[in-house]
Image (cartoon, rainbow over all chains, first blue to last red; front, side):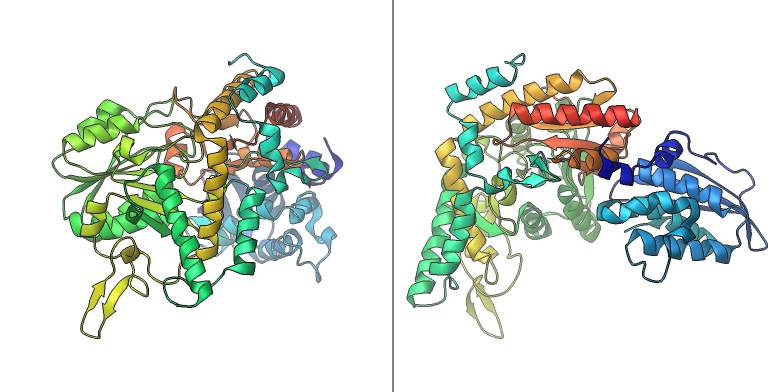
Length: 150
Length: 421
């Protein structure tokens, strides 16, 4: 594969696309929100178990492209154990990096999510990467409805 | 013809009068590169590229002849009016309408369908009446009717399709009822490529006295269209898919229907006399052309029609069918590729999905090889639901595409499968 494509499709993305983590329905979820990207048809259901502001558990179901699947898979791994505020801060950093408005944040702050930073060169694909986080944001705000990137 | 390789096909079409190298040389954009690779433009169902003559006609018009139409007595206004009205005559001849007053210039197919829904629908559809469409429609031939039905309390009926993406004609016929006020159906599906049996559809509807609108946005770039032979009551199409500019389209309507319809929008040009008490509307076609129209792009559309007439739509259709046969055969050799839309009568559209690879990933990887395809729901979400896919990848062909480009596409798809498989 060409080098510039490798920038977008890093090995970690392929790995999470082939074997998504936390890919199951959560029986004891107390937050469930659907995310939908009408442009490409990506759909996901995000399940959270939140106890006293701490995201104790996160899982998802759905179908999407490699970028969106890897993004939600990585996100569910990352936010477990975070406070809601920490997760929302991470969303803000992620949004800034993926849209290239990153003057006041550093790439390192994203931790494992750095592998998704390549989408900033693909404006049509940014929504694939951010759908998971928009859905999480709605779940934290306790908006029990579906979220759309449009 | 289906077993022909690139070379055989090249010989095949030169016998029939379409010289693809010559056609390609007429489209400046086709010589550019994308990401260092020669552009392979296979998104023609979204919009087609423009020949030099269209680009030049627009520049020449702005540089030499531009003014407003139907208004001034000065030279430029008269010149612009003549050029604009000449295009109406070109459109009339291109689709073989009886009269140029049956040709209404609008922004595109979407506006044309909205015009019929609001004007004809508003005047002729009542509570409990029915509009019949098909399950393969583009959103622009669904939503205007939903809006009309919601406003009036009418019912939208949908004729089903089979798993090849073909209309079920018997079921369609059974849905024509005493309450059906209009049939609005696509001539060719943008998501599947299916070409509908429109003459039978129109015959069935007319037996019950029901008028038929054909959404011709996809069909008209690929085949000769004769509205009198079809006997359709309305035909809508866009200039930009027909190698013309965006922002200009056409509604053809039988004059007796158009005469009886109320205006769609109010404003200048559509009036004969205005007082504060009342307005007398202009005659056809101006009754439906309120405001200063898209004059320059209409002139550009005229140049596109002139260009197509030098090639001949029958030659275009014949060449593209061979291209479709070739790409279909090559695509079926790829493991893990499933075609979405396998109608027996089909235009040059290849909609497909790959096992384990989302269409958006296919689109991004192919773009790195200079190949432009569409990935998504193609503004036909009900079609995606029917085939139980979130989206498809779609390669859609035009008269300037070649077998060599099909080979590049196949090489790109092999790469996609290798990387994601």
